[in-house]
Image 1 (cartoon, one colour):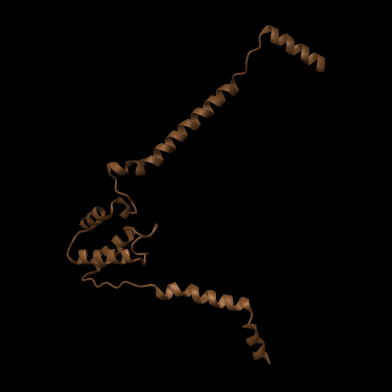
Image 2 (image 1 turned 90 degrees about the vertical axis):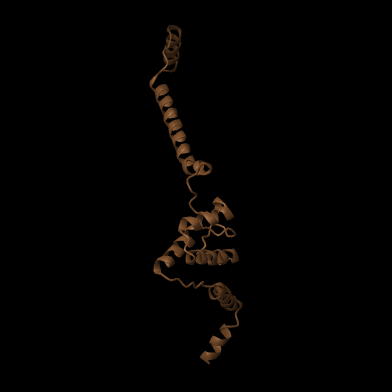
Length: 166
Protein backbone atom coordinates (compact mmCIF):
# COMPACT_ATOMS: atom_id res chain seq x y z
CA UNK A 1 0.00 0.00 0.00
CA UNK A 2 2.80 2.57 0.64
CA UNK A 3 3.95 2.20 -3.00
CA UNK A 4 0.51 3.15 -4.24
CA UNK A 5 0.46 6.28 -2.12
CA UNK A 6 3.81 7.50 -3.43
CA UNK A 7 2.81 6.60 -6.99
CA UNK A 8 -0.41 8.56 -6.65
CA UNK A 9 1.56 11.56 -5.40
CA UNK A 10 3.29 11.68 -8.81
CA UNK A 11 -0.03 12.50 -10.37
CA UNK A 12 -0.30 15.87 -8.71
CA UNK A 13 0.22 18.74 -11.17
CA UNK A 14 2.69 20.56 -8.93
CA UNK A 15 5.06 17.61 -8.89
CA UNK A 16 4.87 17.22 -12.66
CA UNK A 17 5.62 20.90 -13.13
CA UNK A 18 8.59 20.62 -10.77
CA UNK A 19 10.00 17.61 -12.63
CA UNK A 20 9.46 19.27 -16.02
CA UNK A 21 11.20 22.48 -14.94
CA UNK A 22 14.16 20.45 -13.62
CA UNK A 23 14.59 18.73 -16.99
CA UNK A 24 14.18 21.97 -18.94
CA UNK A 25 16.68 23.88 -16.80
CA UNK A 26 19.25 21.08 -17.12
CA UNK A 27 19.08 21.24 -20.93
CA UNK A 28 21.48 24.15 -21.51
CA UNK A 29 24.10 22.61 -19.23
CA UNK A 30 23.96 19.34 -21.14
CA UNK A 31 24.00 21.11 -24.50
CA UNK A 32 26.90 23.48 -23.70
CA UNK A 33 29.86 23.04 -25.99
CA UNK A 34 33.40 22.97 -24.79
CA UNK A 35 36.10 24.10 -27.18
CA UNK A 36 39.18 21.94 -27.12
CA UNK A 37 42.20 23.49 -28.73
CA UNK A 38 45.59 21.87 -29.04
CA UNK A 39 48.60 24.04 -28.23
CA UNK A 40 52.30 23.40 -28.61
CA UNK A 41 53.26 25.06 -25.31
CA UNK A 42 51.66 25.99 -22.01
CA UNK A 43 52.48 29.64 -22.74
CA UNK A 44 50.34 29.54 -25.89
CA UNK A 45 47.47 28.07 -23.89
CA UNK A 46 47.80 30.82 -21.25
CA UNK A 47 47.86 33.50 -23.95
CA UNK A 48 44.73 32.00 -25.49
CA UNK A 49 42.93 32.08 -22.13
CA UNK A 50 44.08 35.64 -21.46
CA UNK A 51 42.94 36.91 -24.86
CA UNK A 52 39.63 35.03 -24.65
CA UNK A 53 39.00 36.57 -21.23
CA UNK A 54 39.94 40.12 -22.29
CA UNK A 55 38.04 40.21 -25.58
CA UNK A 56 34.28 40.72 -25.66
CA UNK A 57 31.89 38.72 -27.81
CA UNK A 58 30.57 41.19 -30.43
CA UNK A 59 27.15 39.52 -30.55
CA UNK A 60 26.59 38.91 -26.83
CA UNK A 61 25.85 41.54 -24.27
CA UNK A 62 28.56 41.89 -21.63
CA UNK A 63 30.11 38.46 -22.19
CA UNK A 64 33.71 37.69 -22.99
CA UNK A 65 34.76 35.11 -25.58
CA UNK A 66 35.42 32.52 -22.88
CA UNK A 67 31.92 32.74 -21.43
CA UNK A 68 30.00 32.94 -24.70
CA UNK A 69 28.59 29.97 -26.55
CA UNK A 70 27.55 32.07 -29.55
CA UNK A 71 28.68 31.20 -33.04
CA UNK A 72 30.66 34.42 -33.46
CA UNK A 73 32.51 33.76 -30.19
CA UNK A 74 33.37 30.24 -31.35
CA UNK A 75 34.70 31.64 -34.64
CA UNK A 76 36.78 34.23 -32.82
CA UNK A 77 38.22 31.62 -30.45
CA UNK A 78 39.22 29.52 -33.47
CA UNK A 79 40.73 32.61 -35.08
CA UNK A 80 42.73 33.44 -31.94
CA UNK A 81 43.93 29.83 -31.75
CA UNK A 82 45.07 29.95 -35.38
CA UNK A 83 46.86 33.28 -34.93
CA UNK A 84 48.66 32.09 -31.79
CA UNK A 85 49.85 28.97 -33.59
CA UNK A 86 51.04 31.15 -36.48
CA UNK A 87 53.25 33.04 -34.02
CA UNK A 88 51.38 36.35 -33.81
CA UNK A 89 51.88 38.38 -30.63
CA UNK A 90 49.03 39.39 -28.33
CA UNK A 91 49.25 42.99 -29.51
CA UNK A 92 49.04 41.88 -33.16
CA UNK A 93 45.98 39.75 -32.38
CA UNK A 94 44.37 42.62 -30.45
CA UNK A 95 45.10 45.01 -33.32
CA UNK A 96 43.52 42.56 -35.79
CA UNK A 97 40.39 42.31 -33.61
CA UNK A 98 40.28 46.10 -33.19
CA UNK A 99 40.46 46.68 -36.94
CA UNK A 100 37.70 44.17 -37.48
CA UNK A 101 35.31 44.99 -34.60
CA UNK A 102 36.37 48.38 -33.24
CA UNK A 103 36.86 49.45 -29.63
CA UNK A 104 33.80 47.45 -28.51
CA UNK A 105 35.81 44.21 -28.69
CA UNK A 106 37.81 45.23 -25.60
CA UNK A 107 36.40 45.01 -22.09
CA UNK A 108 38.87 47.68 -21.01
CA UNK A 109 39.01 50.31 -23.76
CA UNK A 110 42.51 51.41 -24.63
CA UNK A 111 43.66 54.86 -23.54
CA UNK A 112 43.37 56.83 -26.77
CA UNK A 113 42.13 60.27 -27.75
CA UNK A 114 38.66 58.87 -28.50
CA UNK A 115 38.40 57.12 -25.11
CA UNK A 116 39.77 59.84 -22.83
CA UNK A 117 36.25 60.73 -21.68
CA UNK A 118 35.54 57.08 -20.80
CA UNK A 119 38.62 56.95 -18.61
CA UNK A 120 38.58 60.41 -17.03
CA UNK A 121 34.92 61.48 -17.35
CA UNK A 122 33.85 59.95 -14.02
CA UNK A 123 36.76 61.63 -12.24
CA UNK A 124 35.90 64.99 -13.80
CA UNK A 125 32.25 64.68 -12.74
CA UNK A 126 33.33 63.66 -9.24
CA UNK A 127 35.60 66.71 -8.94
CA UNK A 128 32.90 69.06 -10.27
CA UNK A 129 30.32 67.59 -7.88
CA UNK A 130 32.73 67.85 -4.93
CA UNK A 131 33.56 71.46 -5.76
CA UNK A 132 29.85 72.30 -6.04
CA UNK A 133 29.11 70.61 -2.70
CA UNK A 134 31.93 72.53 -1.00
CA UNK A 135 30.76 75.83 -2.50
CA UNK A 136 27.16 75.26 -1.40
CA UNK A 137 28.17 74.24 2.12
CA UNK A 138 30.45 77.27 2.50
CA UNK A 139 27.74 79.62 1.30
CA UNK A 140 25.25 78.04 3.70
CA UNK A 141 27.77 78.38 6.53
CA UNK A 142 28.36 82.06 5.78
CA UNK A 143 24.66 82.90 5.73
CA UNK A 144 24.13 80.99 8.97
CA UNK A 145 26.93 82.91 10.71
CA UNK A 146 25.67 86.33 9.65
CA UNK A 147 22.56 87.32 11.50
CA UNK A 148 20.89 90.35 10.01
CA UNK A 149 21.36 93.60 11.92
CA UNK A 150 18.15 95.32 12.94
CA UNK A 151 17.84 99.06 12.61
CA UNK A 152 16.37 101.22 15.39
CA UNK A 153 12.79 101.12 14.03
CA UNK A 154 12.85 97.34 13.67
CA UNK A 155 14.15 96.90 17.23
CA UNK A 156 11.35 99.07 18.64
CA UNK A 157 8.78 97.10 16.66
CA UNK A 158 10.25 93.81 17.93
CA UNK A 159 10.20 95.06 21.54
CA UNK A 160 6.56 96.10 21.15
CA UNK A 161 5.63 92.67 19.78
CA UNK A 162 7.45 90.89 22.60
CA UNK A 163 5.72 93.07 25.24
CA UNK A 164 2.32 92.47 23.66
CA UNK A 165 2.77 88.69 23.75
CA UNK A 166 4.46 88.48 27.12
